[in-house]
Length: 222
Image (cartoon, rainbow, N blue to C red; front, top):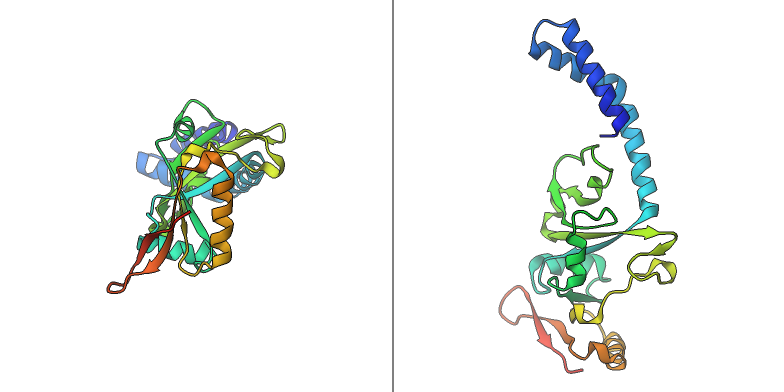
């Protein structure tokens, strides 16, 4: 909660205690007063802070679902042009990821998304809302990586248009969607061959299992 509103909450609580004869009645009066007078103002300030934070931070959305999992199949349909695109697999043990787990650094964060029925709490620094989604999206098993934009340049590498750079060894594999075509395959192959730092990357393509309702990842030569 913002400092000025924390002090106001204390004032509301003290007045409720003075005007009632029991703790239960005081708590009820405090909640009624807060919801009626203060909550709308606090919600508006919270939303304004979220909008401002969008200008100061960049978010990388990831998933813990393997490419052949049912959840990944849905996401490849949603986010990869109906299985026509491809997915990256990153090594989450790489030091680049570890650096985002440094809790003392306010400029970065990496957390699992929390799925629930209620919206994010209007407390803390306003970033909690960036790690909350509604329960129907639980199958995505999403992890969000947050980094600050400093002086107009992205802390990840300072590339144009805020495009972040990450170490090549962090990329483990690329999996082409079931509906991807030869043009997409050729483009990915060319990019991998052109970068010596990506010689370790494995290439796969999703194919239908002939017996079960699922996808299987088939190795593709580079």
